[in-house]
Length: 387
Ligand SMILES: [Zn+2]
Ligand SMILES: [Zn+2]
Image 1 (cartoon, rainbow, N blue to C red):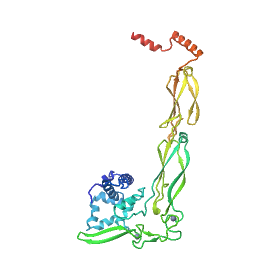
Image 2 (cartoon, rainbow, N blue to C red; image 1 turned 60 degrees about the horizontal axis):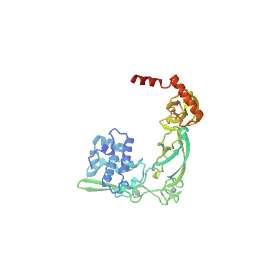
Image 3 (cartoon, rainbow, N blue to C red; image 1 turned 180 degrees about the vertical axis):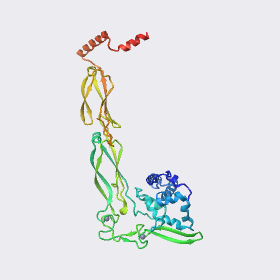
Image 4 (cartoon, rainbow, N blue to C red; image 1 turned 45 degrees about the vertical axis):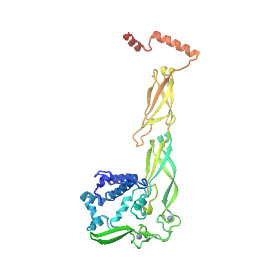
């Protein structure tokens, strides 16, 4: 057995919570999973090592033993002599090996069983694999994100078979406890060697580790206990939700095997870009143009908001690129912490062509301005100081 640090292998601190350990384990397990790296011996070794580490750290009792005694607590099982100690960690009836279930319960992907068991030269043991997590992508408009929206989505998933209630046994016929392993799903063999007593524990071949045998399989699900169904699920998208937000619907993933918990459903929300309004955090931005007369004389204009139109007062003498704020007209905070604002940038458009009347008026204006020297006075004063 290796003397590597299990915490290092899983990549967590000694102070990590059970949840953090599980999360770190799952992340690495996905990375080094033999299905992902079919020909990579290094990854396979890492995966083995990772599972060995998690077998201990993922089990409260074993973790405590490891924290106190280190690897010494687990080496007894290898060379015999003190197998009692190893058996002690298993927590009773199932023996030391029963902890393999702990590794995978809540791991969220049931195919890991086949790969892991395969490496050990055993048959697939799927007796209590939890259901897989599912992902569903949904696209909504900015208006829907603003108000919140209820959506119905169609999710194809494995559900518990309604006919056999997930047992896999034909209606009315019960599962029978496997007589070979007495329901434990495991068979133990004890032999003596010069090192002492060696115990090997393997999966029961008769029930394939399930501990029970179905005499007559359910015809609806062929004894799987699960059936593929497309389910309509109501999704409540909260007001203020932003692009790429995730919504977790606990237990709405695929049904687990043999009563194991279902996976979760993750809704990934995409917000379509709006024609006019742009979101930054909880504020909305837009740009509008006004004429030179409106900027100089002032006006009241209509601007689009997320809830329709609003009036915006342009004061006389408004400079181009002035930003006006419409308080509280932005997006609501998804956590209920108030609302953003709408910010309107006003750009003054200088006309490129003028009709005869406009030209005449502009010329008069120009002459008038020069005489009264109100335009750019400060600038010309500064120029004079230079010369
Ligand atoms: Zn069934
Ligand atoms: Zn059995």
